[in-house]
Image 1 (spheres, rainbow, N blue to C red):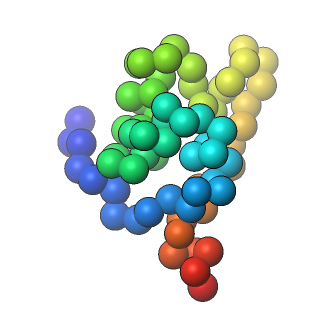
Image 2 (cartoon, rainbow, N blue to C red):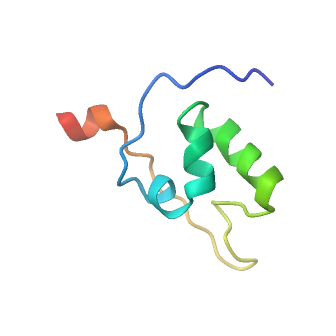
Length: 68
């Protein structure tokens, strides 16, 4: 795995960023995929599958998109 910093800043109102504060701390530094993995390893909680029989797939909203 290459843990390179994310190119775009995530908007603070983004679904995952606002709902999962632990994920947000990683997302400030890494890509969505790497942040999701690190948060899952730390918490045993997958942001895409919060409960066994449900899924939450939302498009990530960046700050640049909100500024336009």
